[in-house]
Length: 134
Length: 114
Image 1: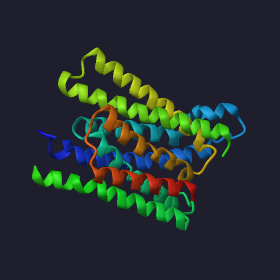
Image 2 (image 1 turned 90 degrees about the horizontal axis):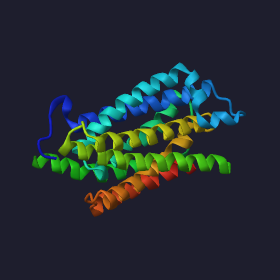
Image 3 (image 1 turned 120 degrees about the horizontal axis):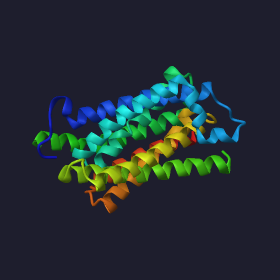
Image 4 (image 1 turned 180 degrees about the horizontal axis):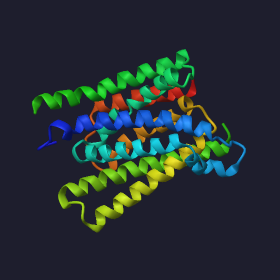
């Protein structure tokens, strides 16, 4: 991680941006896919009919943005660290479903979310120490 | 969940995991050799193609299942990607990182079966 850029080029900032874009895009995709859902058609397993929804197109734009940030992150951060950290979306998405899409979160699901938070803390701590040394 | 749904979830997961590893390799390669060479372009193209496949399969699945139920399956990719990055890309995997990864995966599985 030598010669790491600062400011907007900071890989950790880019990782955050990438996660934020994925989070919003997942909610848009679910809304869009539900709007145009044709569960009785076999063709709809391909997901291509999802393109009829404008929300899906917005989601695609966000995914491309998150993808560019992610490729940038991959230049500087090992996959063993960057990928587990990027899974903070696995907490954000159920929370977003609860808040914005009105889906329910059971006690078991809350417990699962708590485990993810502890796991993320374990992965993130050595990163914080690594940063202090730089 | 039907066998067909399971099949599409697995295909979407596998293509996603392989895409991540290939893209990491591509970006690593670009650090030393720049972006204008055929090796980087072909690796990036394969990675993006696999990502696209995974995306459309997910869009098909989203028409049938709740996002909060379906999404965490992708979370299983944490364990696969971390392990494969350590094995195939020879990245360091400390005990702490392993434990963190296992907890994240356990949490995601708990979310998806609840």
